Length: 192
Length: 259
Image (tube, rainbow over all chains, first blue to last red; front, side, top):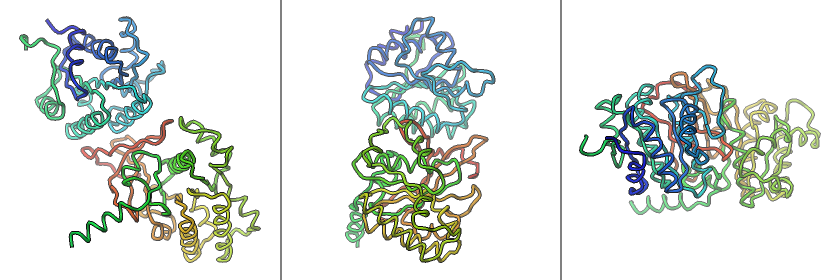
């Protein structure tokens, strides 16, 4: 049995602000989002900065709306939708980055949202490292995650990086182990 | 020997700073521009020169330092519209006179400088007029946008050198920290159109566009800055309502050239 959204939120709540690699699967994808965006962020009274590199932010918003998740304090940095011709619907909390290869611009949007949040704490959710790996070389991706993690650490923010088990590679696994403080899996310990 | 070097390093760090208010740039400069320096902000069109200089003035005005924008090419009222979207902008700065906009063509007209080509004597007249304005308004920060447009009317290297040297000295003597905006073509291999400005300025900040695999990134690099140690690395910038933000340029995939 995989962990429930509440269980993953409880696990995160016990941690100080840190860089966390969260291994998920297709079936635990939305539970993991719910655990971080809804339960964990609410418990800690944090803003969520959701970097969507896997699917367009609007699709995530639609699902979270069905799940009745309050998105008032959730901001999206979407680097997928701009590449889709004909995508016009735009949520006010969505900030677009032209392409998932513009990693510096992803960092700049996160910086901007953190600056706008004032004294309120933040959790940055990167969804996902595997999708960014499709568009970027491992070298530049490692550099990006390293700088992003350190920037967030300096700002006392949590950063949760989704790693999709089925699409992961040894290289990505090593990188996440190297640049993240903690590795958590959505699977329960005994099932690993 | 080591203590001599330490003393020298300390003296550099000790020099009074004029914080730009742009967090990333102040970090690059170890606290800000050394006060009284005349800096050349150079780049091709669309790289953020005017926006950056306006933010420098707005932060100065908020901190209570009278700030002056001398516009050579664009009308002031049009420029003012560019500062209004800033979250931190307060319109009362203009009403109180802490943030002042002056059109250079108005100065030319008042000085009776109607000839297209200005003489050496005219150079002295313009520098004096700007100096008087700085005194009268007690200006601590000044932007001249653009010095290239002024140089266009000076024509010769001698007059350009004279203008930059004189304006730099006058402003520095008055404790005014200044940004001279310089326009260059994207392919230029120097930092100013006439090649004179870059040699005389106390600092050079290069703004550019970097093309990488079809993406166009806005970049900033401090090439030279007298009176402070500083990073010479390239940074990527974004123009946001919260001001200019900077992050380091990732080097892992950097294979493109500057456009």
